[in-house]
Amino acid sequence: MATAVASSRPMHISIWRTLAAGLLLAAGAPAQAALGGTTDLNLANQAELEMVKGIGPQLSERILAERAQGRFEDWADFIARLKGLGPTHATRLSAAGLRIGGEAYAGNAAAPPGPAK
Picture 1 (cartoon, rainbow, N blue to C red):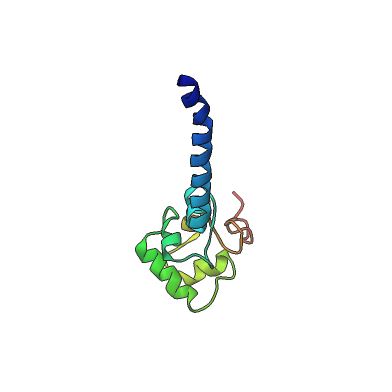
Picture 2 (picture 1 turned 90 degrees about the vertical axis):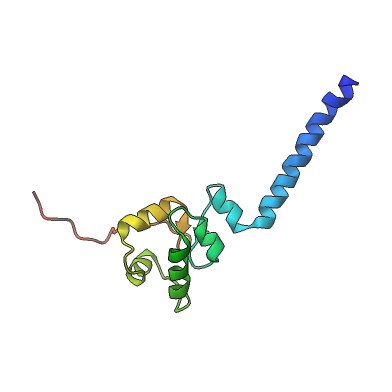
């Protein structure tokens, strides 16, 4: 009897893994974000945006309202259009998986260097 139980365990585990994979695929982008994936700012709905650490209901509503005026072209456009959101916040959101057109926030690479010390 113990042999039958031991031999059914691998099948049991395999079935659960298959079911779990199917659920993740059915859930789509939210599951990807929850598993360390990315969320595209121009494609995500409110629930998907709120799964990104650092985006709550108020910020997600502001993002969606601004996006209704037009897609975000890049991170500079996003920062310019969302008042109160600067490079530091953009860095955190990008680290949490937020992307614009598949791109992570790279900081202000075009900024001129500061004065020499």
